[in-house]
Image (cartoon, rainbow over all chains, first blue to last red; front, side, top):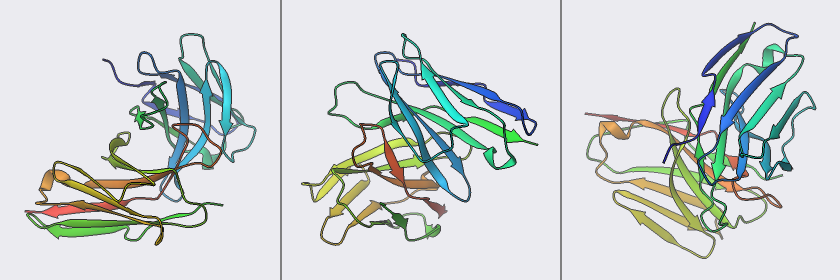
Length: 114
Length: 114
């Protein structure tokens, strides 16, 4: 079974630009969550999508948005990039059964804003 | 809001010894608590989940305890090996959130010296 796949692995963007990151969950998983990881704040929950709907949202500004497609693949978009958006962005998928609540993480996308 | 503290940013131990990592939380009692391992440049990998009605869980050389009175979880690695060197994260479910929506501690970086 293939794991969670995130593309691209690395990105360098300029302040003010926008960026789109992609995540393909484990086959059969319908829940995809996104996290931002920085040295200072650690791993912080951005939002979660389930069956193409945003189900939960963390405490991030509206510049951070996402969507999910019918095949459960998800994209995350950050508009008007700021230097502080430089981080490792991780997505995680979860089993649909509701009993095993572990999260399966991808390798992450390392975003650098210059 | 819920806060998670992992007492040590870094822990150095000798090979063969038992490593004990601490995770403390405030406010509400979570339905479950999870431990993850993260290697540099990679996403976290799930290790163990313990539910609020469980006192202890074991998996090979790993043991997790959960004390809801103390609001604390202890994570033990027995007979530690240099390959156990990594950052270990504890995570709690977000209240009102869905599976896969987690609050993470900032992690403890474990170094096992030969």
